[in-house]
Length: 335
Image (cartoon, rainbow, N blue to C red; front, side):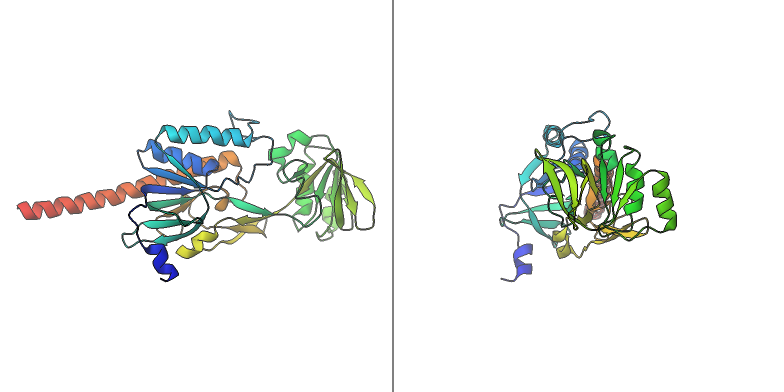
């Protein structure tokens, strides 16, 4: 049997849902909650690999400030279940259009489910600079967002690892949280004269040369070792990762990630969508970081709600069309 035939073949034991939500983070859970309250049958498929798992707490989330990520997700799952939502642990590897216009979602273990609509909230993957120690300290002392972590490292020795043309912008941003900021140029371009002036005016130290590794003391970051052997003290290091949409399975529907820019520079890839999360493929919506790379948790949750409302409206429109067609057919028979 061909791969296409395998993916489109229906089996009697496949469950059918109004909506399958792929991804169980803030966007997916809030989308599922919204759909459950709209009396839709919803299944959330999640691989159990949340991006913010290493973080100690979720920040700038009103009413949930500092909540550990796992605790927030557990509360969200309980709320979704309270409205009839179901959960399935697994990794989606493909999604195929069915003859009736719905979808068949295939998992890595060979299982499959059917859905009338898809809401994809799989988030993104951080591609980190290949500097020893960065991955090991990611989410603790190696950080990406000052609004997420700046308060926790305020007034400390903060380093910024330059990896691209936005390095100066990043260093000046982190300067808001500490007067002791060092920009390690690493692989970033040399700042121009105006940029050097801005950095100097704000007291940001510029260190040239590549970073060779991170130094630690008692398991915490203590400095950045340069290629020439010198070590610069550092208690927190800001790193710009490449943000890559986690959505390879959408290729089977013809949806491929496209570049997303910030400040005129490509920072990663995302699945393009309109303001409601609707993609170029009818019946497929996206929300959260898979669609907008810089969304924080509270924004991703809001995007999940907005997309879910659009999904429900689309289902209502289809159900109404069918009801009208059935009524007309019935009238023509009895008339």
